[in-house]
Image (cartoon, rainbow, N blue to C red; front, side, top):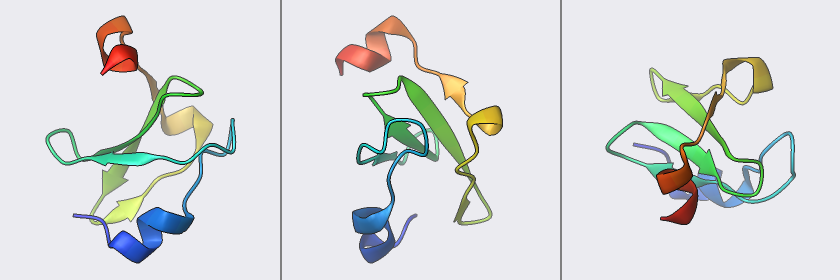
Length: 61
């Protein structure tokens, strides 16, 4: 789980758009850039090189 205060200030390093937390995958999702950033041991890894591209279905959700 990500702290709500932290989630309010985090933005995607690529698009600078807000991110949302996906608890089922333990990732931070940025629809603007189409990337999902992992959360490891409760710490968001906000590196483009560590992100995975969203699938077409994920971009629409």
